View 1 (cartoon, helix red, strand yellow):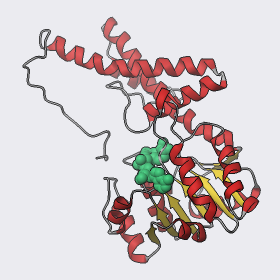
View 2 (tube, protein in one colour):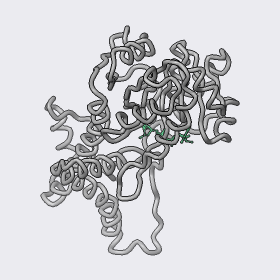
View 3 (cartoon, protein in one colour):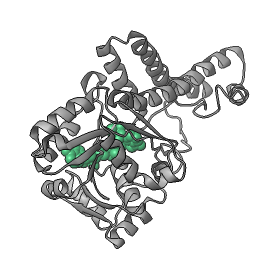
View 4 (cartoon, protein in one colour):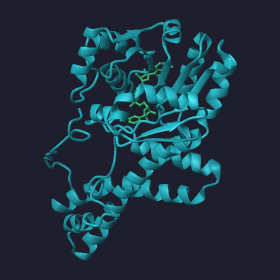
Amino acid sequence: MRLTVIGVGYLGLTHAACMADLGHDVLAIDTDHERLARISGGEMPFFEPRLESLLRKGLETGRLRFTTSKEEIGEFGDVHFLCVGTPQGADGAADLSHVTHAADALAPHLRRGCLIAGKSTVPAGTARKLLARIRAAAPAGAEVDLAWNPEFLREGNAVQDTLRPDRFVFGITSPRAEALLRRVYEQPLAAGIPALTMGLETAELVKVSANAFLATKISFINAVADACEAAGADVTQLAAALAHDERIGGRAMSPGLGFGGGCLPKDIRAFRAAAASLGADSMVSLLGDVDEINKSRRSRVVDMARDAVGGSLAGKRVAVLGLAFKPNSD
Ligand SMILES: NC(=O)c1ccc[n+]([C@@H]2O[C@H](COP(=O)([O-])OP(=O)(O)OC[C@H]3O[C@@H](n4cnc5c(N)ncnc54)[C@H](O)[C@@H]3O)[C@@H](O)[C@H]2O)c1
């Protein structure tokens, strides 16, 4: 199939290279032309295991190409994957300006039936508004379909997570959209990866709920760590014992500094802001607590270090073991 990828950041570049590896013809675009030029020369903008060789392979076979022309993108794609950033905006809500700019730039060049598949993490309701906006501006009008196909990749394991995810989530409004996504992912689906089909809003919410749950698990075990410390208990032994209960599990249950990175903090704040506007008050208070517990971990670690050296860190030499966001990341 002829696929396009709009936005070649962490998600988009991984997606583009993996789709080319599956045998599709992929054309990708980004507003950052310097980044595009470097990637077109085979240079990785970040470290991710296996991705550089997939990028080089895609470039060599000609299955993966990059352009700065929106016209070319509009004309080329049977399916357009929207992979632009959704950073944290004022008041914590997701800043959707990159998504709307990308959609507005693409729509006038959609002259034939195609599918836009959103992969960025967005609040519920975004996709439906985007569909109306794109159809109004696209010469192909109602021949343009839109699906939300959220991405669950983990940095450090991004290639494997893209080619063999735990599941695909297809938020759709038509059988045609589902059929096209099934063709895109034919190989992993044939290998037994499940695809769950649902409405647009549910698909959007699956992604933010998954991140909210992971964040909650991490803040939970860190809150338990505080209780352990006060009681003279060992939280590591406790977590190992909890992990044997299948209902709880051991993943994302390591006490420590808390969560960071480019996704969990911004995504729980965006979900919290969206929940507030939906009137989903229990989610607002739950995620507020999760965020506060997480933020307090950092000052807690500094306090512990201070206590360990007798009250003041001033003038002390501090060694930090491990600076990466997580294993296999840069
Ligand atoms: N990085 C991850 O691990 C991960 C995992 C799952 C989901 N996500 C979600 O995927 C989305 C993208 O995340 P990311 O980490 O790849 O972000 P990123 O900042 O690394 O990349 C975004 C890219 O989009 C480009 N861009 C912005 N506006 C554009 C436009 N109008 N047209 C074309 N390109 C444009 C930027 O130049 C940039 O290269 C976010 O919604 C994020 O929450 C990220």
